[in-house]
Image (tube, rainbow, N blue to C red; front, side, top):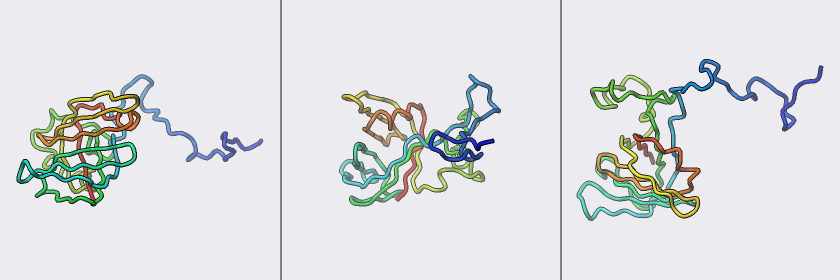
Length: 175
């Protein structure tokens, strides 16, 4: 009997087959998903600390993406020319398990201290709310989020930013 082949003429092995989750029947909503909604590396091109003592608005651009973000500079000092990785996640659970805010009577840090978290691998973490989307000209979209009054603005292609249509998100940054 001939060995089965994929379209690219590679032998079929268990690792080459697509993964299927047989535990969830068709049509059911799975509570597990990919936690990272957006992930990109930016060079800091702007730094403005004129309005507040401990808050600065940083900005950066790359290819077809640009952002501006208010950060607490005493907690996370950055300078023009440095490179930062900016990520947005729907949950801090590495496996993508959804969190129930009603269960938590304390902050995320105290409640999940013993469990592994995406926050463990980042230097600066904030929790906030996506409050506005604006369709730009053509394929571009603008996303606005607030992290306790510290604002984030992202602009880029719809296909890169449309996954952020979540009400609450985590901002994760590292150098």
